[in-house]
Image (cartoon, rainbow, N blue to C red):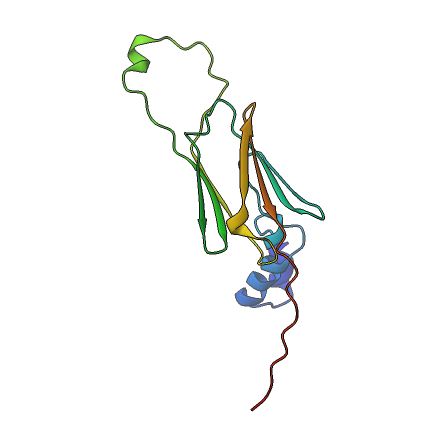
Length: 142
């Protein structure tokens, strides 16, 4: 394909721009095609916003929830167990307790200070209610 462009007297910049915006290339993804590398379900209904976050094998004391301004952050930091490799022979390790630090910017129509969190059977459930409807303000011009 590159030689085809060179035969038509395209400059290297033309080729670069053409390759950058070419539809079939997989290196460039739209911002809406983000990959979250941790199992999370996010959904909304008339009451608010819900998060179901997989935390298999973790306790609620090991998970940290942070709310800073309009950002919700869920953090787990794996602690290394020193000396376990020398004392135990592992045949298969299929349950990975990987550290994660995931966060979302929450829209202002949700009341982030009123977040509710519960954990059962390795599933962290978060609920953020909708803000009460605020009445429109009338501003007088002086």
